[in-house]
Image (tube, rainbow, N blue to C red):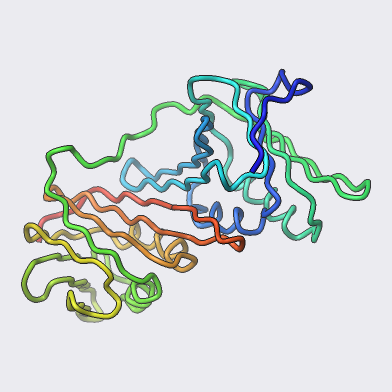
Length: 272
């Protein structure tokens, strides 16, 4: 990766170049369930965040090392909102073009459009996406004194459980405990009840740490948004606190071996 301050681009606050648009696009598309996205540009890289009704928040973290060139000329973050479907459509267009050149991404400053350009052998594809003030972004995080249970598991097993759930159910119960049933999913609907439980010694679990029993129910309509990201990831770290705040952190390996993370927070857990 090459990081520099470019003299001929002094008017741009943020400039990034990436030659692996397919992999980055798969990360971004895993968040494609909201109309708008908030972008956070900083010296550490790019974060893209989407929300639904302050109940579900998902963020993709594209670290500095993923980019071939990265320049951010400010001490503070540059934060702006974009139409997420438009952003995904632009990235899909670049990926479908078959052109292998580096994608140039830049923003001149606050209130200026997000510019994307791909140029190869005299052929140019470019897009300009309007940006706006991000407004208030919910702060989803675990309190410092929270008791947090944590499980790290292989993604394909978790996706299989989620895929097999009754999609007509309203709520999904998730339980973590130090004793049997250890790790349990439960659904109930007009079609009946279903239950999946996993032993902490199962081959699908790489790490299991349960300090206190936690058992909460979450809306299936909220949890289903995690399936796409889990499906393209290799590992998932699931955390839950005693207040029912749930977090899925999905580790995704790019084609070149670099790692990206997508993190989902789901609130509104109801005690079981």
